[in-house]
Image 1 (cartoon, rainbow, N blue to C red):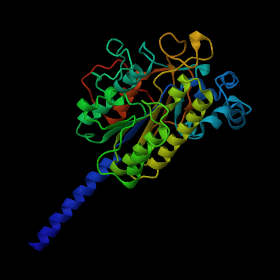
Image 2: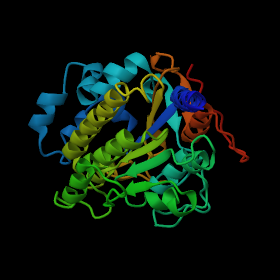
Image 3: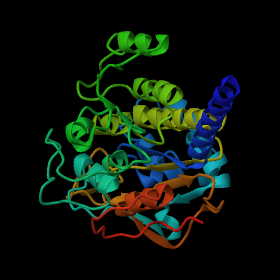
Image 4: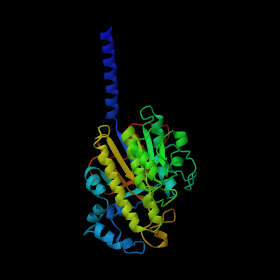
Length: 360
């Protein structure tokens, strides 16, 4: 009898190990957005015209640290992870100077409509025409995954902007969302307790957007502890600094966000649950103007601003062919949700207008 019990226990343990091993083979996705970052900054580096305009106060520092002898050198100085890692191991889309066009399909060209398009796979200009805190009637890829048996309770979202609980519709979807100045909840480790304490002790620059460093570390601690398989992280500082006409702060924030993404990538590549099984999909919710003229003002975006529909996209992961910067291609933001669905083998009854991106 005792021998039989030992055998049964061994079979149970073996089955548990097999389930864990099988889970570990399934792909994971980190969808990451940088609010209002222009394609020009990603692919060209520091804009000399804006650098030498009244939008910049610290011209000497930016010039010394981020201006080199070529556009290729400038962009590496500004975003080293993008151009030393993603450009070598993944794919980058959106350099319009090389015929690589990534566009929004929504006509609003500001944040809520942009995030809805990215997260649901379709624009909704009829129902989403403001940044107001209205619960989204559309189903996001996060909710879609959380409804499935495979990814139930394995989805999470972290954002600097406090509108995201409404965009993701956390009440209906059941997706845990930590956004704005929300605290981490549940059984907290010491670092999460510390983050809860200090996020309001740091300068509150904007009431609706917390500093990205807090969003990043709330996300990272949750990822370490819970190992979700679909994670959404939205960094927000860049857009708010741009609206404030602070080009030097915008650029420094962009460089810092590149470093935060590098930190996250280094973590997942050293964690057995994520290593070699994880995709990073990185993009922005909208573009913005090119200069100082009203119709193309750099501080602005929206349907009346030239270039606000122009975005960009970066892909990195185990089956992403290392093509680097892609030329002569046209993609749309509404292709991101179908691409995640294909990676995770998710099905939907909804008729999405766009096809997945072919990255193999």
